[in-house]
Length: 291
Image 1 (cartoon, rainbow, N blue to C red):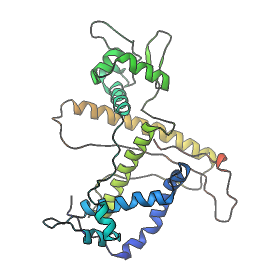
Image 2: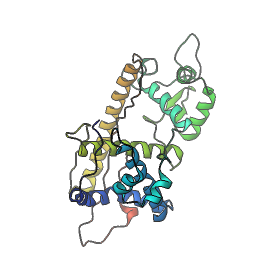
Image 3: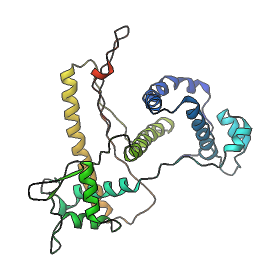
Image 4: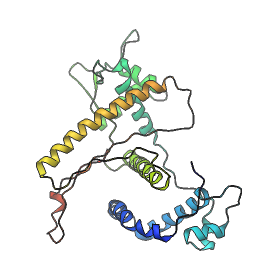
């Protein structure tokens, strides 16, 4: 990674106003819906500005001072002094998220738990002689929780179901938490952070470092937009399954280290209102979902 430098003067900054406004609009909609007011967001942004300037723009061999942080951020030195050293807000992985995602990833990738086409097998709850079962699947990932407790949780959440033979079937091809609770909000922060971090690195770096591309078409009929969304979901799930299978196999032989890796795909569609046209009822507008 390149050495931190001072921000580019305001000429480049003004060019970001439009893209940043578009970027923030969905987030502001969520904040208003969740009751997070502008003053509350301002307090959070003030802390983040100080934290980023303090650590990401520190110069090698030079002490980072309150005056320099104040100059970089435009925040008064008294506030800088109060906020420095607080650390950036973090979003720890909820235990249930980590456990569930690891079990599902193994169920989708390990040869013992998939059919020749790579689909997750329906598993008996228990089996003898080391045969694949839901119990052995859970035990291969964690010994900290009983397989029966995991199964009860998954049945309650609709992640899995029992077939007529009493075997456990995976209902989700990927862990997709819903309802706006802790698991979904964790992935909301993690996935959007990584997508934005990759895009920012590509903008500020000397050359694009990360793969970040999109296919987009405008002026589509409702039917074609829906059909393309459905087909994109199929393509995306196949790509995610393949990436998961290859990563799972590679991790078995890896010595381990400090790096993490994230491969994400998003799909979005909306009805675009022409300038001057009547705004449609939001309830009638179909929107794509971001996995």
